[in-house]
Image 1 (cartoon, rainbow, N blue to C red):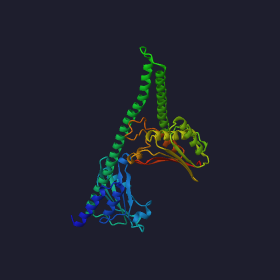
Image 2: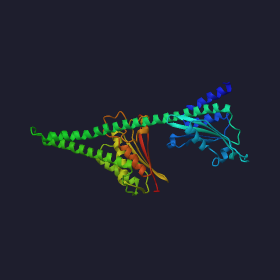
Image 3: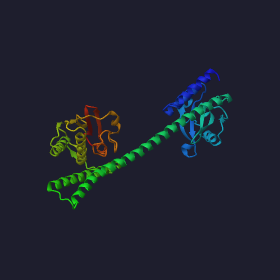
Image 4: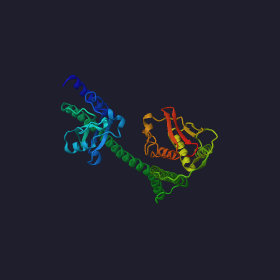
Length: 391
């Protein structure tokens, strides 16, 4: 093998491992064309169409580039090569045409893949004919192309296996999380109810009231958890009903804050609200979003000031919930709005990882966006953007 051809082989080999398989093939055939001239080429696979050759890759590089729709791509030759597994060389017969596109010279070579046979067809318009000593070089390119496609298949299979593994782990985590979250309030309710029903013990009124208060609170927690599971399922399937009406976000936020202050006396909230024009929104669902962001701030940044701002822009209104808590590590941000995802390190905090998922789905249903800005030790800010006008 001469040095020029050896260099060509090395360059072709480098094209195989490219992450983008199409770019890898582009590089491969661009390198090949320096030694082996062709105008069009197409790779056909039997596996892609259940036994009928279908083009999985095609390029017009030379004379056929300007007339791709009319140019030959060698489908019939591909079918013959794929079915016989043999090299096919075709030269046009008859009188030469003025338009070279009407005179395709074809070279078809078998392409052996793990999931079925195929063919690679080279096309030259107007000649020259393929020389016998050129076929081994073309066959080398076919082998490299097969390796590239096999790499693609391997990566896709690995990605599917990883996705399946992730889904299986996700399901296991979901079952474990939900089981724990459901068992906790049920355990409290059952335990304190059993204590009150004991015939061998008489509880004083204060203790009875304490037990009944715990039972009441845990019942509320259980109802809330079940409601969130149902809401998340409806939102994921697109079956959550929304009742849109004109809503002033500044008024809605004041109502939410006032209700939260009545419930949690020690909460420190700073309001920075601009006067807002009404937008089309579901009041109940937006309130659910704001309540959840309050709950998150009180849970994960207890005792810190919560600042709620509203900016009114020509095309949107922006609500920001920010706290001065410990923040969220950056590696968790891509998963923060996923269903059942919980940031590790908060094992003592109750929750099924549904709140932020529900928030995002509700905001998306309003044609809006929700994002998070955070830094360890500097707090967390959830930013909600809602369109000012209905579409």
